[in-house]
Length: 201
Image (cartoon, rainbow, N blue to C red):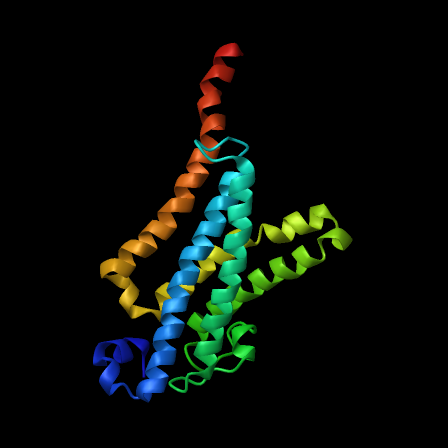
């Protein structure tokens, strides 16, 4: 059985019943919100480290929004994992959520999600131990958030057949385009300064 089959058959005739259907939709919905929040976290992280002021928004406000979005994404991550494990439609254990590529159901897709979870957990743990491990190690591990984001997108694309069309397709494309645009905006001063350096030389 596949997620696409459940989506196509409608809430009234799904195999898992009303309770299972609600859990599946909650898991799916929280996953979509989580993807948006992770994109926002990565986007704000890129903008914060750019060293350039944002029009109409002070840097401390960007950093605060980045922190709050990170905490909110952890809450939706807990809901996403919890509902997926509790839902009887598929057989997933709690270890499947943290041990990549060990799940019996869609091992590659679930494994990508577990890998993203592990990267996020590493960020949480090192942030709690930041004063003990030092800023250099913390920043190195914190940078793994940039890897967790594309892995999470790959997890969504591999496991969600409905994401390839309609609103979810445009939402996914926007989630990909926003950090790419932020990277270009962040790199633009260095790129634009090249002709000036060459002229000075």
